[in-house]
Length: 235
Ligand code: ZN
Image (tube, rainbow, N blue to C red):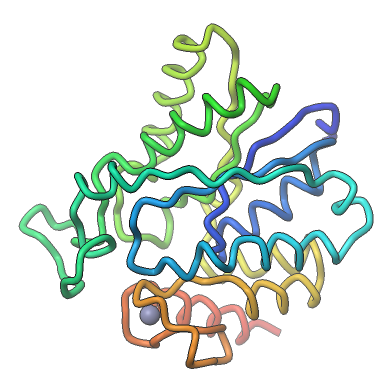
């Protein structure tokens, strides 16, 4: 299925998921741009990894390189201050009475998608691509496909222009996301994501594990380690 005439805007945080989404988009669309958000995240090092990872992925494939356009980093620190969670304030990772982890930033994906849609509108992009995932995650309600379907409708109405939200990882486990990366770009893409993506909430890039850099104990490291282990066990 080729949709290569379209332009896509990838929500690119430099995590494993958005890195895989970037490769997925580069494989499909004629032109791909990226957008990222500074919301005062404690793991700000991911912002430093964005250009490194972008370049590492593009360098794997001449077609990908030719399709990759610009990057936009948006300052949403005011929003992050309002959200006041374990991702933006110095506090322990734990579960709240709601059952959600206190890494939940209320409305984060709603804000990100609204801002991304505004940028996409100006850039002539038809498609937003995000790494939201229902399967293996922490139950964040703004990662659900139902939320994104409603957002897609709201954006199309509000901009008076269709804007598709593609979520290629929605039904995948973390291990399957590694598998998708391998399908898209072979071992070289898997290696680039291992080495240059950043997932750890604590912002640790001092400790290198088989699954990449991280503290090894935060919820993001735990999920990433388990996903890699499950992937690596499959022949
Ligand atoms: Zn960690």
